Length: 276
Image (cartoon, rainbow, N blue to C red; front, top):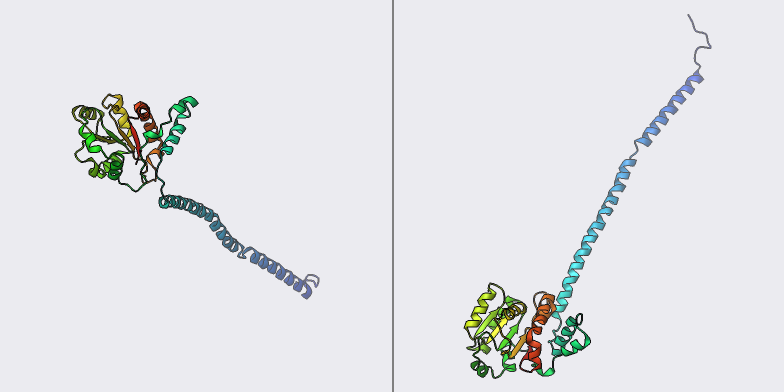
């Protein structure tokens, strides 16, 4: 049976449908091209440098800490290369006032002032220990021959550590001669052993730390009355460029030792102080 003419699609309608289908196809392809466009790839490329920039601040902070450490080293290098200034009696007097000012009245602080006559000539950094001791005590040989009292010494040399005490003992060979020298520090030596040695022997020179010397005085093993010379290892610096009196613990022990009869001996002019 033949269809009526009205049922047969015309050429124009076919063209319209073809164009419509082509339009839809093109629209789909355009949409697909838009969807499949390499936008995510571009976004990934743009995100990668952002992630790198986020990591960089951590590196800069580490670099900053490294530069800070380097600056500290440079400061110590400057201190090491700077010209050292020798200690003076005024330095000791100032440190004493600063230490005792927190618990002493004005009148008591004035009583702590030591007379200039009790200070020996300070080391001008040109002396070895032997040459300095010969200068401040030219009659040492005669003095040590007349010393026969036990539990005492004629000269005390105070330093900051046992290692430094051993160095000082080795460096004073030219001065001490036949003098009896005793190590007065805590490393490997008990207090009771040192007390027994002081009771048995006549000792002329004592080299040690203020803490152990204090303990010997407390236990009655060391009498300061025959003492004639008290020398501080003042100008020597350790690896951190600290002097003995720059260390708070050592400074505290030194001033506590001075209160155990040293002040009264200095004021009576029977004891002389030296800064090596």
